[in-house]
Length: 88
Image (cartoon, rainbow, N blue to C red; front, side, top):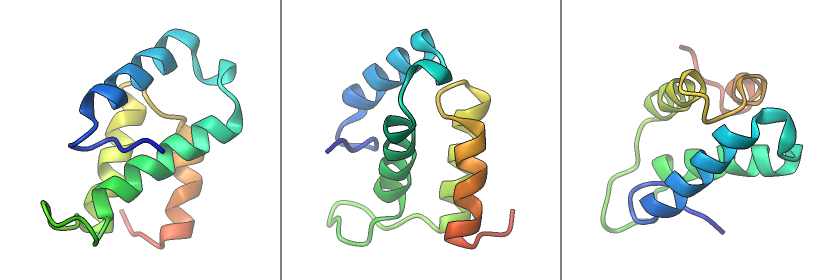
């Protein structure tokens, strides 16, 4: 189980580096989905005493920025939009 922000920033950076080097198609779909969901959960989680949860719209915008940076799969992030019911 990985968490991306902020407590496991190094783990996230390493995963993002691997993702960038390998390219989207070289990582299994499961790994790509779990990475996106882990980042989203880390940003919006309500059970972390050290930080407040981020609004889902802001979290989704961060995922979109990560797509632009080549860190996440664009099609999967777009698919997430319908599941979390966000208007952006």
